[in-house]
Length: 100
Image 1 (spheres, rainbow, N blue to C red):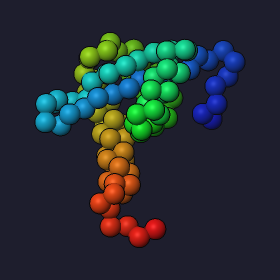
Image 2: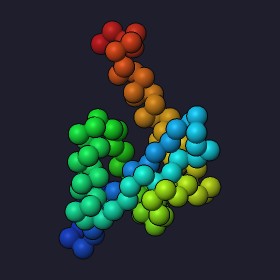
Image 3: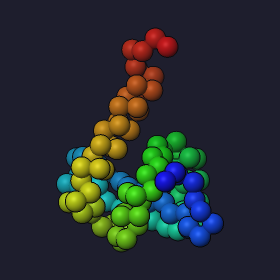
Image 4: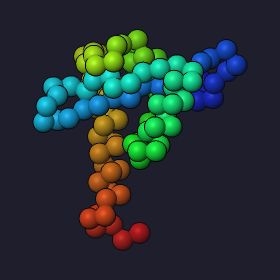
């Protein structure tokens, strides 16, 4: 099963927010299907917010309300994504010591 949508599937998107100084776990910041999903992705791109595509995880997260903490059964999956994004952001920061 690839990442392409079939004609019967509706695009979905979920945005998470996490402040390690204030939040115990990440929360749902935005969630939507169809046109709203497109808008969430568009805003993320405009704000240079990392976009990670995982249809299975989105299907699980889209069920929860905005402002709700992610459930414990999704902690591991979300933690791996946040660690990946943190690493990419660190490597792409102006203070990075990489010499590409």
